Length: 442
Image (cartoon, rainbow, N blue to C red; front, side, top):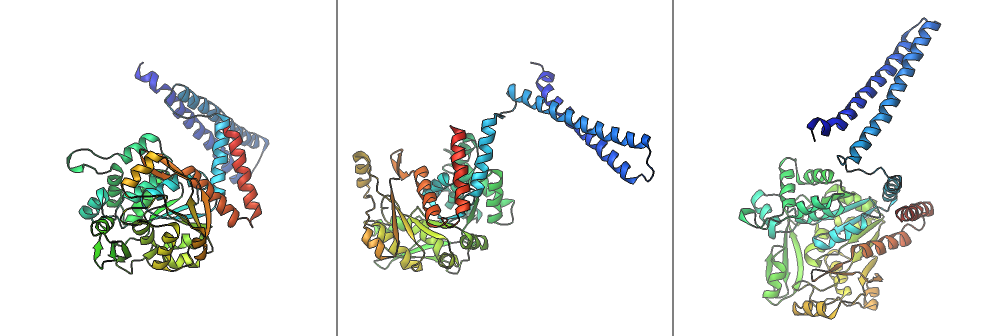
């Protein structure tokens, strides 16, 4: 194929755009002249009408022919776009559905938070993810030490979870270098580090990366302060560094007594506090109790906002216990630990898993001294928290994770039922759009 043949459809599109612009100029010139003239005659009026009508006709021709040229590009494979009316209607309803969705704030870190966000983004675009910045291990820790930036790993995962990107782009941003000085470093971390380099602060860098990847909702660090996580073990020793805490708890055979942050007066982003106060629901977790969930609540003003918000407050309990952090913990122990650190009144409902895992996977986890988190509803109720049960287990690559679709579904159902039931108009419109979208997709 000659180059000119390959370019011809695109050249035609440009020609029709230029023709359309000329038609618009005809219309503008005709209107301006008609308004500015003080003397009118049949000749002049006919001229103005002809000029304006010609402009409208030229614009009409340019639009119709331009669309044909675009369709030609699509049919030839130069543009990967579908103009299927059913898909277009589905897209419109989907966007309307997401805009009508509840305002949700999700607080946490690690893989648990990003897993949940992947499911929630199909129900609402009003999501704010507030992410811990205490990570000091792996590639994030290296960048934090080398560049003096906040750790990008958890934020990168949350951005990708909420992004509207092609699988290839996600694979690229999740890619880890296998050799050389960049070994085990994620390309997405480097991307965010570069964005931080051209931004005034880390918050702006996160916003820019979110814009580039068309993120549904917002992702933000809980604070811009250089946060260091410390733990006091029950044997009295103090461990510094998020990645060291569970390892030292295991090595010293002593469970965690309490965690704290430095600086202890680290301030939360105002945008994060405002989002909590304005939310329909705030979700804690899922994620490592001591190193992903509680550190966010220790940042100044976050726990206070949790107590003062009118939002429904939910905690997603972990499926499995975590060695070095929650050995032998039941659901009520997780809740009690949160209350011990920041006070009660910040959890209304706890989402717990009642699903079972197969014996082979259970045996593997038992070897690592990890077990299904037990549930004692009476003990949970005594803490002033109500229980919502479901089977949320998803096993992939020998690892147990929450099923993002099932978890998001029960969360949205709970929020609609317990928080937004009074707003009947909003509920009816939301579910009408939801059902209509399902019909279209079928």
